[in-house]
Amino acid sequence: MAHLLSKSVKQLVRKIPIVGQTATRSVTTLQETLAAQVPEKQKSLAALKKEHGSHVIGEVTIDQCIGGARSVKCMLWETSNLDPAEGIRFRGLTIPECQAVLPTYSGVAGDGEPLLESLLWLLLTSEVPTKEQVDTLTAELHSRAKLPDHVIPLLNSLPKDMHPMTQFTIGLNACQTESKFAKAYAEGVPKTDYHTYALEDILTVIAVLPEIAATIYRNVYFDGVVNKDTSLDYSGNFARMLGYDNPSFDELMRLYLCIHTDHEGGNASAHTTHLVGSTLSDPYLSYAAGLNALAGPLHGLANQEVLKWIQELKAKFEAEGKPITAETITEFAWDTLNAKKVIPGYGHAVLRKTDPRYTSQREFALKHMPDDELFKVVDTIYQVMPGVLKEHGKVANPYPNVDSHSGVLLWHYGFTQFQYYTVLFGVSRAVGGLSQLYWDRALGLPLERPKSVTPEWLWSQVKK
Image (cartoon, rainbow, N blue to C red; front, side):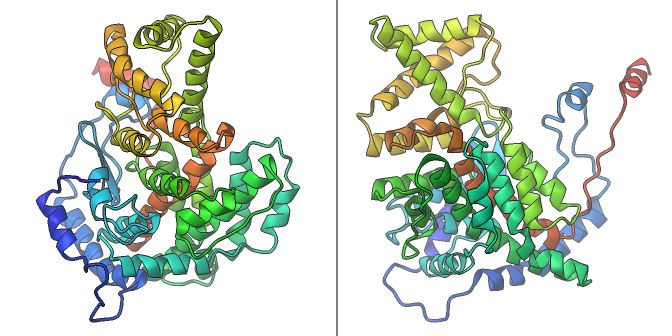
């Protein structure tokens, strides 16, 4: 996939060895890279606080106070930034730029989707890794992926009608017995070493999540058998554990897991992970809390709502003998809006344009499944829905978000258990939330404790 690269990205590309050349030195590990960065970042943040701590960067309105702190600038987040106009940037790189420079399964940047391990490296270090560095990280994650002996029996004992996300948080919480951070804290290690033990937990949490997730999927919907293939990368092995053996589906998993990793710090799952982590709860407990936030209908369940809406649309017009066209979709959209319901998959709390994560999935569909029936419906919805929502006039952003497309891609490959889709999201979001949690501990960020106010206090401010 060809993309135009910014000057900064081109400079990064030049630092990556050409595939096939032998490095003249040993490969720098993730831990070594971070150890070199931590002192400088600590120094920079301390200087920022000392020299400019009183500098005002915004103000809070009563609307923001009552309305969930929307757009209030009050959280430090290293790993990504969400711009209303251009969308997400991972350590300064857009999704197309990441696709152009991050190592892929073939080893050639731009030839296929980025490996999740390469994005993990980028989010943790702010550096584009070489394929050799990514391979060492893949091997390390595989080496950390063994679940504690009590976890699989626990998952097997859970009722099949328990929601997959509930099972997912139970499984991760059960792994907390292995927390090196919790053990080190109990032994009184100095604060300056917290990040070292946090990283140990973070890498292990990311490593064990696929088997927890796959065990739930196979238990609830199939025979409970989970097969692995550690000759593959993280995403490819996860696909095998789910029961899929299709290189095209492997590529979908790489794309899906990468684009869902991080969306700056204000979203509920990332913020919850950060908040719980600020109490010095270990990464297992912190991310389990983030998963519970992700399970909320207004956060991680949105993609299944989109798929249900599309299937209702399709069923309605098939029953009436009508073709699915721009006109009939427009009719169904107005029926939905007039019933005081929302159009799922459209609008976003921050974005004011088409979500780049949607665009990347649309490009994947055009490449891998251009004739898929549901994709054609989604594509037609994309052509007409912004106009409908603009005419309706009550939506700040009439453009599609990431959830508008992901369910349709999964459905194409026979992954039809949409109640499980949020678990996939949960495997991915760990990479972003936990990468930031590393820097929370490395930079010594304090317990998060905003000041709350009463309605009476707000009225008193207005009267003043």
